[in-house]
Image (cartoon, rainbow, N blue to C red; front, side, top):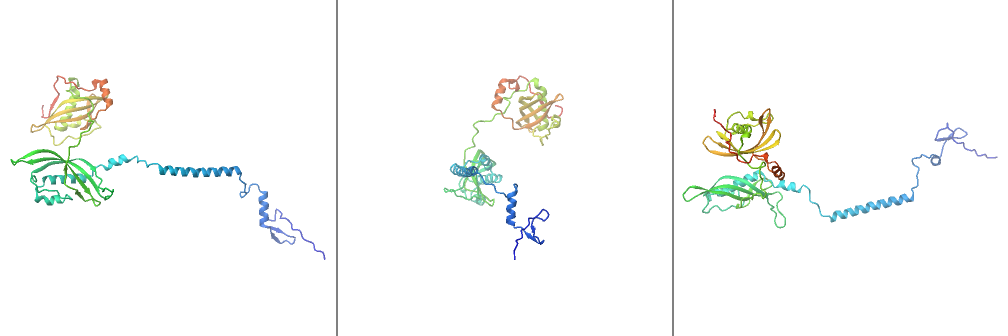
Length: 377
């Protein structure tokens, strides 16, 4: 008997992609590995196709990675060896920390007043409530002083750590300087002015906010005056001349309405500026004595002035102002008032040397324009 092997047929376009048909019509699956090999070999756009890398590209990539590793190591060494830079906001933070809390300032004034006025054993309870270490009050001069006024004139934070740098971080410690106006009781049993005492006391505030004076206060010198003392801008003061009578009349009328109760202050003001008169009026009459006028623009001036007011009891008092005025519709109007004058700078000195007419500094033999506060004057 002769055996004949049947040759399998290849799948046609209409037979599908997953089966082959034999002569008997039965389906037979194609070998998946063999088919996958044929697809990869015949398809040039296969995304899973592996493309061999070039040796030069591999070497370049390795060199780049090692360079990055070396740079990172060098940067770490530089960071360890370089000293830490100071923060840029150190000065601002320091100035903010040197502002004494108001409650510590008030407590320091109370402690200084109590200490100065203590009159011996009967005041021990009052002193003990304010001081951690009770100061001595049973001495001969106790009870012979009184304080008429106190003012905080200086304060500085104190590092309360020990020599090893320790200390309670929750504690706030300040050295507060208080100026106290003191009177002393003399042998004639009369009070005499003892001048102003400058007293420094250490005030401690714990984490709970409790305040106490650390020890007995100390008498210290008065605060130093600044080496470069400020000077108001505008040069020296002079007597107003007759050429400035209109401006002087406006200034003095405004002052009379402001502090002497003479007239309506609003009539002297610019529409964009408001200010209320001083009540009760401290003066019955005020007179412009000296001034300095600086031109700010063609129709704007700054006036620094000294005026003398007289109260109802006939007591005089000299006051100073800085005003800004603007000329509008043929009349001068006040646009600003300040008790703190504008300060001069070096550039202003040069400008005054070039243009001496900006200020009125030389006394002129003319009477000042005076506006009395009494009706009909």
